[in-house]
Image 1 (cartoon, rainbow, N blue to C red):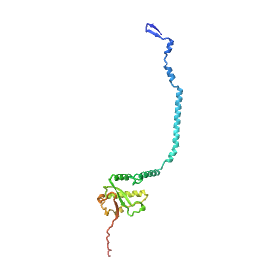
Image 2 (cartoon, rainbow, N blue to C red):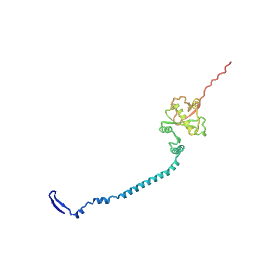
Image 3 (spheres, helix red, strand yellow):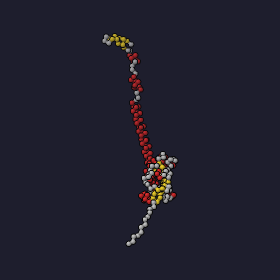
Image 4 (cartoon, helix red, strand yellow):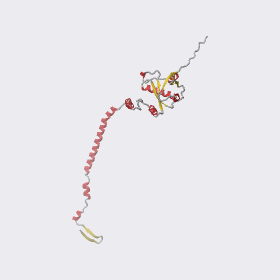
Length: 227
């Protein structure tokens, strides 16, 4: 290493060539050595793309293979409805609280059962007129509010009978106008003649049984007019 004086720039230090080669920057060599080969990168990216493409095609083939089996397992609406009812029936049979519910239970029946369990409703029985054991239950069980009137009881009975007949597949039209024209509802010998009266006013309580009683009219006999 030598130092020379320069009039314009002062002292200038010169480095011998052999030492200059020693201090030659190596950064470009490092970068060139460590950088991945361009052809290698291109081939790797192409291989990755091919692998992804094959994977997508395989999945598509699996989905296509599964489609026929899925279609074959699709249930029609009646079959799905029957399957749901059978499953619901098994659940209801194993639950002591829900055992009285029909598999085709309605929201009104569920709400009525909840009211019954909380003591805000009561279950009353209405004996069927001319009930036959072969026809099923001899009395209809109704869940009514403790504050219901006789008229509301009659409406509940009408709705319950229609629901029972529908579940049994019986297409029968009942003229309730004729039923109430020909019969009274009776509890322990007392006829429920006032439709606006509360049920508890007749002493009706939980598990009470009501009966139909025929209405008898006094027939007036008129003699034949003589001509």
